[in-house]
Amino acid sequence: MTSNLVRFVCRAKGHVEATPDEMVDAGSPVTIHDGAWAYCPAGARTEHDWEEVEPVSLAELKLIKPVRPREVAAEDSRT
Image 1 (cartoon, rainbow, N blue to C red):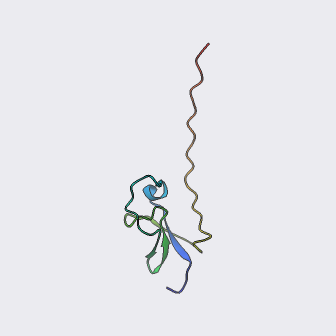
Image 2 (tube, rainbow, N blue to C red; image 1 turned 30 degrees about the vertical axis):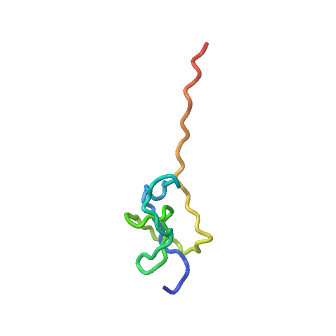
Image 3 (cartoon, helix red, strand yellow; image 1 turned 120 degrees about the horizontal axis):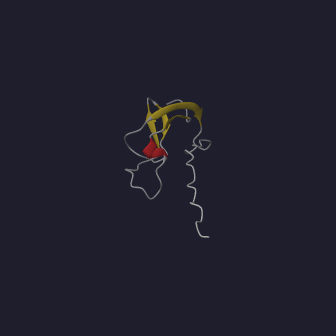
């Protein structure tokens, strides 16, 4: 390892969307993949979907979570 930059990010749906309350076999969010630093937002130990990214420091790494459309409340049917 010649760099301290993260080169892979896990994009597995269950890992990206994991909340702190969900049970994940959590380990460290930083690991090694293909000889380079890799980051998993859930800190999961297995079942990753690694995507190579532009090398970035862990401090600068920001994941954009999928935006979910807000549920629209049904119109008030009172008259």
